[in-house]
Length: 327
Image 1 (cartoon, helix red, strand yellow):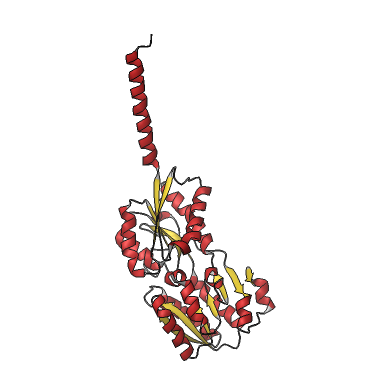
Image 2: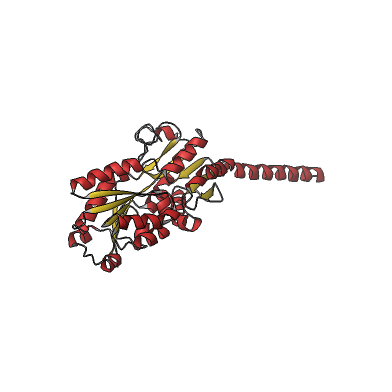
């Protein structure tokens, strides 16, 4: 016989079970943070690629994972504060997008895993012990631009063989800039080209840097793939366009704005791939034992409209090598 007391007890137990189940669901939701150098709008396609990668690995936003994103808007000096903000939100993994951002995260925590995307010179900058065994709480993907830079300069020389003075634009305080400069000098020397070092810290420096590039007699520009330069790519391209010189970049995103060509890895592809690291870490893997992945595919993107505006004829051999031609 079912009494009113039994029904009441059953209802009570059901409510307790339901509340317990709700609490478990909330607790099971994992939290991933990311710091990007750019604005929310400019970072959107890259972070969307990260989320897509996580979906493909079985993670459902709002159900078993949630994201916390912060944006530096091109201001390197905000990195420490933004990392502290992510840590205050109890994220379990932090995805970062530049050497300076990794350093800020490294200063803030030695326990929360850090997944770097498209970072150059990770070993030389002291971020990891080695590419094979990173050690510590940092792992992720390298863009190997220190190895790609000579190819950028060689491609520029093949497109505009008359160029004899090339300005190399570097971030003034980036840890990898001295390495980039040494590599650029070696590559230029091999081609009989004079390398001119030019520095900038932020968007406020771009116009003055462009003026100096022209004043120093540069005939072309190579831009290092610094996070600030990517974040402020529209302002940078606007400033460099005023020089009326061919400009080579490491990222496709800067070519669609008017650069001559880019050679390097795909930023969206790297963010998509970073999801594999986040997934492994959330499932228990330790960053110290996850090797740094080096890129195997590099994309050559050519802006034919820019070439025509500059009066440059792209050799057919270069066009045939291109992964994308913007016309």
